[in-house]
Image 1 (cartoon, rainbow, N blue to C red):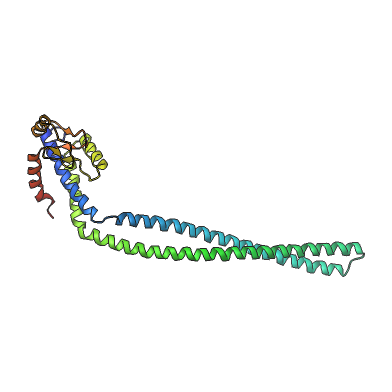
Image 2 (cartoon, rainbow, N blue to C red; image 1 turned 90 degrees about the horizontal axis):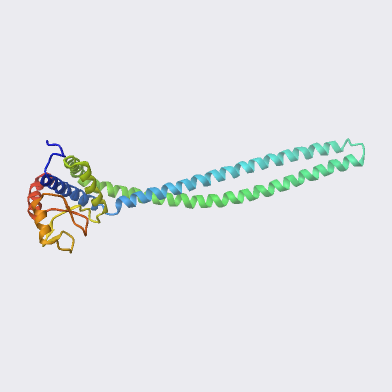
Amino acid sequence: MAKTNDISVEEKLRALYDLQIIDSRLDEIRNTRGELPIEVEDLEIEIEGLEKRAEKFHADIKDQDDQIKTKHEVINHARTLIEKYKSQQDSVRNNKEFEALSKEMEYQELEIQLAEKRIKEFGAKIAHKNETLDELNSKIDDLKNHLKFKKEELEGLVAETKKEEEYLIEQSKEYAGKIDERLLASYNRIRTNSPNGLAVVGLERGAPKGSFFTIPPQKQMEIAQRKKIIIDEHSGKILVDDELVMEENERMNAVIKF
């Protein structure tokens, strides 16, 4: 096969239009899937976000459970001290020592009350978070079921055209290999910026396909001569003549027929 730099402008134009035919068929196949791929991706992103939020709830609940355990330890320690101080009061030598121990016992009672208050507060927060977490998990389950349905629907559509799509992808690579890198980059850029994915178009009644701007007769003659790559100044698309379009459409029917 000739090097891409050695082929004529006409051969380049034919290769570009052939590639366009293949890529347009690929576009048709993928368009039959509609918004399904985007819906599946959006659902996966939403589920991932909700699962991260659920993980944070679990972490918060664990942290508050740990806080409750700590407060229970404070209560147990305070009760132990109270029992100790009560025992010591039985052997004090004066009122001053007795009052000092009483104050220590009062302080430990306050510690118990404060710890019990905190336990109730943490318990209320945990109950609220568990309620929210249940709602969150229920939503995640619903979304996962919906995602499963959408994935099965998408997989069904993909399976119907999988072999044809794989074949056309290989053909697209093969035909792209016949075009020099600079021209191929221009083709891909035009395709990306085109709503219908068309980068190479023929003329219909003197105007580029899909355009209302008529090409001047002199320019139409230059296109038909196939001596240089001509870009439409209005649509930005590469232009080819009707005869080339007819010839390549007929020839490529055998290539893309599946």
